[in-house]
Length: 477
Image (cartoon, rainbow, N blue to C red; front, side, top):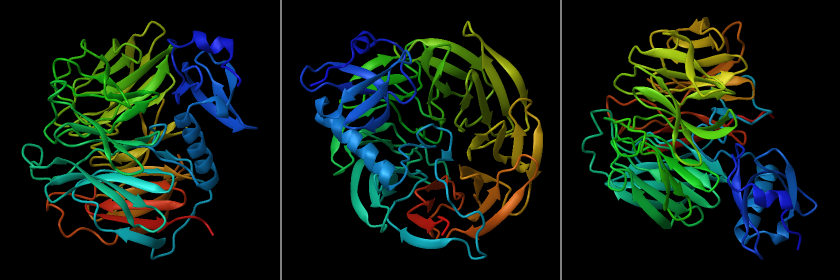
């Protein structure tokens, strides 16, 4: 059996690369955290924290590691994976290619629909031929697993009770968080703060925690809505409150690794945490109502902060490009770009109200940003200057959510579920097709909208309105 290379055992405490995970040698129990590059000739090629590479005999690894490698190889052969909200990189950009570049007048072909997802706005994770989402069925917050080939339910697990109290606020009930898949497990958060880890194979509960009961967290007015972040062996969550604004748990046991006790943000708000490396330090970036923060991945210490004048609800996920970070909020607040200096000081590059993004998300493609801005419709914004390049304010491009795949923007109108295909061009708006989601829920709260973000993965477009998930074929023939 071939051991880890000697350099590897010295690197346990160093900063990890973006897609790092913990690997274990079966015979010795030694562990190391590194990024998988490829599998070739029975060897796993990994990238260490200092940028060096190493090779490990696959057969020398733990059974869990061998299963992980098998799932990666299966994914490479059978289609791409989408394990978390906004994807593995948190950028909202699908790796798909070879998709339709224009739609027929009736839209792409419908493959299947599923009508038991439950009430709520949870999005999708898709891994190894299965789709995972959440919804409230009756009084139960439920994690659901669906076969993407047929739309048939594989399993459904009730994880908590939904009394709708407090967070409903007239816009409809049910979970808003998207479950996250990692190494054979699915992680979910309900609106009241229940955190669960389930077996992805069977749906059986492995462990559970509670953001309020265990960490004295404080939700926003619409409940806990962030999607869980898995980073290597850690599950990262933001309870908010005045005791520990962010926590890291062991993803397999739920045990606390660290708690960010110097972060006391009050309301958790709704934005999902994004991992990154800035100035050689692995960190987690989170947008709260009054501040954007970077928290050290190893110890939970606050590295830097930047003030933010959020109002009512701060929702969109931050976008990170090297040492620059873009944020936006609705309710008239606007957007800004900040830069982290070599000494970890945050400064504003620019700030304006060009993009006032409520909750449909913003996506960076090249040097430009695309998303819906309140009162301006669908817009293209220059990353470097913050200036608007173009906007389209029509009946179906007024407000909603966005997703990017194969050089095109999938823009979902929240009012009636119309999806518009837009060729990405920083010079002008180029519409290439349009159709309406069907069926839609007759049970949606009258104030509710079609708020679940669209997803394209494996040549399929997934849309949701409450209990209905609909799958369309967008692969070019």
